[in-house]
Image (cartoon, rainbow, N blue to C red; front, side, top):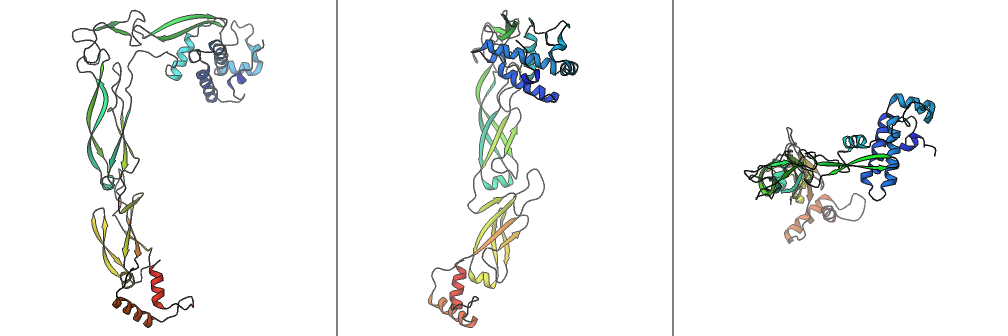
Amino acid sequence: MAKRDYYEVLGVSRDASADEIKKAYRKLARQFHPDANKEDKETAEARFKEIAEAYAVLNDPDKRAAYDQFGHAAADGQGFNGFGGFGGADFGGLGDIFEMFFGGMGGRQRGGPQKGGDLRVNMEISFKEAAFGVERDIQVPRTEICDTCGGSGAAPGSSSKTCGTCHGTGQVQYAQTTPFGRIVQSRTCESCRGAGKVIERPCPTCRGGGQVRKSKTIHVKIPAGVDDGSRLRLSGEGEAGLRGGPPGDLYVYIVVRPHKSFIRDGNDVIYDMNISFAQAALGDVVEVPTLDGTASLKIPEGTQTGTIFRIRGKGIPYLNGSGRGDQHVRVKIVTPTRLTDKQKELLQEFAKIGGGESPQGGSKNIFEKVKDALRG
């Protein structure tokens, strides 16, 4: 049966770069590695052999150049099968390459140190705490090294010994002869469960696991300027590592409670403030709430509803930087819902003095015009 074109096998064009060839090989190797295809192992072995052979040629500049010029005929008389040497080849070497690329998929993990898992917690803080920062103690349940055995898993006064089955590697190899050659595969040692060592007297505290579950109090410093959804990374505060590996990290996700008066816009703060018609028409100096207390704000004569005033430097501090945003005060003129007889009399007098013509030439008097304007 004629061989398929190597470029076709990897699914790349003939002018594909070395990176594109490697990327295609890695993707297909993951898909058809025999360890990852238990149900249809025979077909997977054939495809994996074909993929590996194509990659062995196209990944080598000299072999690729010869293949591009002469095709499969370039292998004739050179003592190997299609450049790849897969006639009766040992797939153990390819397994090592596969482990280098993919981190030991398919049971080729070693019994060495392993980093602990990362943890995540959510921390809810107030609007002002997000603005100015806060420090909190939180309780984090996590896995820690057993104090009794120091992580060895062996009872005090005893020790572990090298596994006699895998000789400390944590892996056992077995060979299988197929129509495509002899395939050597690895799997986790059942005697030591991949640890490479056997514990004769397990630690009574951790029962041989070397780790225990505890709740740890961790002090967290939230910097000024964080926002909802911000993430803090506390290195080494995650789960304990295995077999002497480093611990994982703790990620603190910030949840900011909304403020009843302030709205955040980046590092600026927006505040809506109600003022009376008299204040808007005559002008006034009002006290405005800010994150730092109150601040004086001058309302000019003739201010219209929806006007926005800026108070510089009263916003949110910049995260890990200097300075602050601004506070924007958006005013709204409030229309009175009930008027006393005296108030009505004064407004009617105001309407007479101002004239009765509306700007649009209608029949509304000034009193009606003022009421319409106040309604927004």
